[in-house]
Length: 242
Image 1 (cartoon, one colour):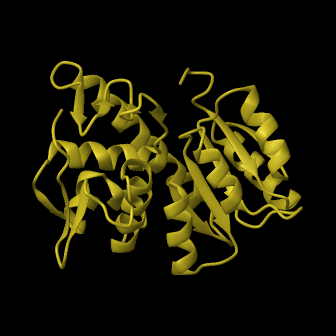
Image 2 (spheres, rainbow, N blue to C red; image 1 turned 45 degrees about the vertical axis):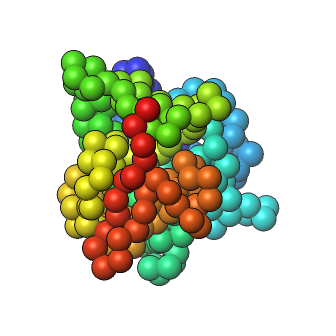
């Protein structure tokens, strides 16, 4: 991401009062903000260039939900997404995280908290990118069961040669698993290693990320062979090197 892209934020919310409030506040804090009210406008904006992050409302007009748009977005992009919603329900949070959200904020929210959460998500991305660059001096890539994980380029390639899009959280999780091949990792350990404690983390957050990751790398996500559950403890990566 270039310097011109690093401070660009996209707000997708059909409530003009919230959109204007976010524009004023984040622009006062040094960001450039574009606000749109529906999925079609979001697609148009994202086609014009990259954004540092997207604030995406869960409830949108014209039959499109934020979750549906997030699913669509995750097929083509790993841009950080912070979900905004009027529902403060644990189940909704887990669903949002399963689909690929980087954080989940219930309305009404405090603007200072929203800014802090944004900065946390962006710090995680920066730290992850920095770690990836450092890896080039050591093990810059890993292979398992025909898959290739390029840490420096943040790229996952399938055995068929296709690029597989991963969110920041999914990529970080896979790197941790590959580097700890054969080691049983508890949820608490995974939260620490992936820096998830900087978010509103809980056990089900980790489970949701692993569900998403399995859908992308397992032949049968319901009967996983790469990331296996260890009852009462956590998970273990058993992919074969090479």
